[in-house]
Length: 174
Image (cartoon, rainbow, N blue to C red; front, side, top):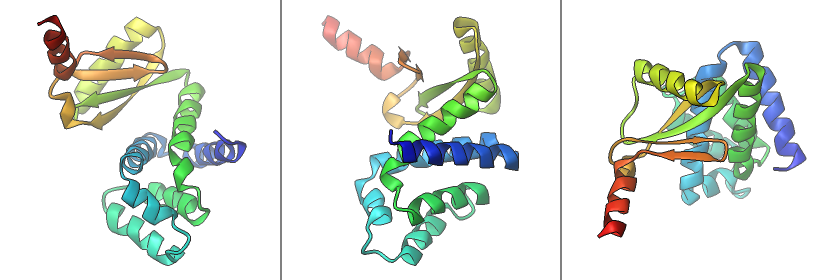
């Protein structure tokens, strides 16, 4: 990650801390970064210097209006206006690290075929705390290709308990 991306992440972190809506905005920024990561067309439209800034900001408003907090929309707008869309994923990853470090937490990226309830997230965080010895912030990404179960990433550690993974293992066995 570039030093500039690091500075953006640190500025976002300070703003989230000051606003008090850190958890919701962290989750929203994480999801938006992953959507942009998976959509070349959308990422290119938001990054294209030939598209007027007003139009790029309107794209954000059209996509997120009513679905994300104003704080999240403002942060993303800042990234778009300054031409840093391609760096959003490393910015958000660093932001999550900063948020986790401030509370002595680690961030677990969890892929699930369906959205998890708050109770399921809480129970998962407790189970992961038992295995890591640290408080865990669970960020869920809905990925239908998982089929069932969960794929959990904490740093470089991946715990793949998905149906997709089990089916793959069965295929290899046969």
